[in-house]
Amino acid sequence: MKPEIKFIQVNQVPTKILVYDDDDGGGGNEFDCHTKFNKQRLIMMITGNPGEIEYYTDFLSTLYSELKIPLIGISHAGHSRMPGCYSRPSINSELFGLQAQISHKAQFIRNHIDSTTKIILIGHSIGCYIILELLDRYPDIARMVDHCILLYPTIDSIADTESGRWNKKLIKYLIYPMLALAYLFNFLLNDRTREQLFGAYLRYGGYDGLSESFIRSATNLLDPYCIRAITLMASEEFDQVLQPKLHIIEANATKLSMFYGESDPWVPLHSYHKIKDKIPPDSQLDIQLCLGQMLHAFMMQPDSIGKISQLTSNVIRNKWKL
Image (spheres, rainbow, N blue to C red):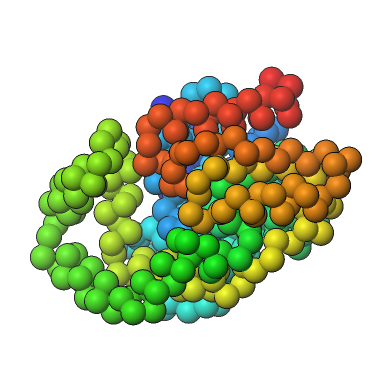
């Protein structure tokens, strides 16, 4: 099933969401900026960075086809190319920084999901950090959350990781050339040509079998506005995501399933062992080193999408006894 793609205003920013729900005729027709999503159960996806939710379409579609439970995925503020009918707020930390992205998700849940709905949150990468902060800062949201599935959680000193060091230098030294190329790319080429060229580039890089939705979303991220929002958030991640907040993990241990890879340049093995060793065994924390050699950006590998959607659906079935 294809999701319904919507833009709604969240914390002053037009925000892209994907909605899967067969009960309303095929995808989100009952859900808009004036109503609350009112279902008994809901699965909600919070992305990594870049936070264009269409990156995850194949994963979410597979998950929905397996479970048939209403599902919503939300982009980070500013990470999706907006239709021309929307005005773009100026890029600033108050709307697009890391702390603002946490508030952005809290406002979405409070304003657009009925408080009686039971939620399972799925986070990827920095989305896992955001989920932990939601549980800690917002007791009303924590009461709605039955469980959280954290995939490749970047919650520990990410500026000191292999990918963190490289990306920090990239943003510091190449941000302006990147923006100049993006402006030129968008000025000279129409949408279809951009997608064709970027799709060819990805295939040349060895990423075969990528769906049209993935290529479209990746191309949208070349919008200069999105690049500025993405790099602002990333810069704040490097400064603010330091030691893992073990008190939050321990306090919510029974609500957490944390899944790690063996060769993740964003989440080295010592991060997994640090949490596993410091959280008491009787806390019932579900923490597993089970993602093998799959890419951190698992959405780029069709085989990984299938494996991770199966792992995720098994957790959800066990939690909700489906």
